Length: 139
Image 1 (cartoon, rainbow, N blue to C red):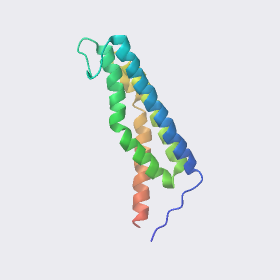
Image 2 (image 1 turned 45 degrees about the horizontal axis):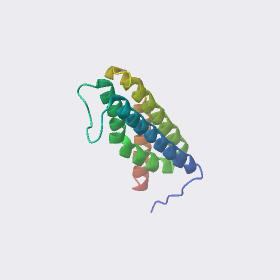
Image 3 (image 1 turned 135 degrees about the vertical axis):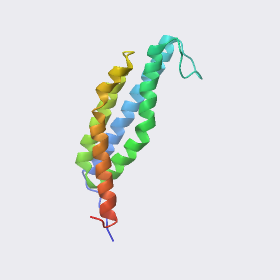
Image 4 (image 1 turned 180 degrees about the vertical axis):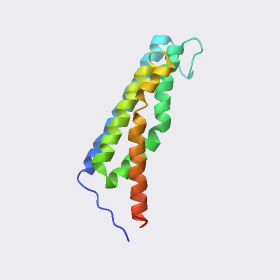
């Protein structure tokens, strides 16, 4: 039976997780400011006459959509590879800021500035899969 010991370096994973929460709050605050600036009030999600607001909202919601997968891959993969996963997580977090600020320009193509975040996400996926395979004795 495989055992799992959490290394002290897992603290980096915890800190990366907390950092991601600040990034999410930052994106949410930007949506709140944009709602006031562009007069788009709840419960309205988008406004066909305010494309910049829509881009700001979409940058946040796209991040919300992928955030659960990011978290579980970070927390699971980090059990075995805490430093690598923390670095990969930080790459993803930074990429989401580039993604959002590219989107904020009003030109959705500029969101691709944050596409380097997939390197972090793929690293997290690989570390999580490796952990699972090791735990079941496949490697």
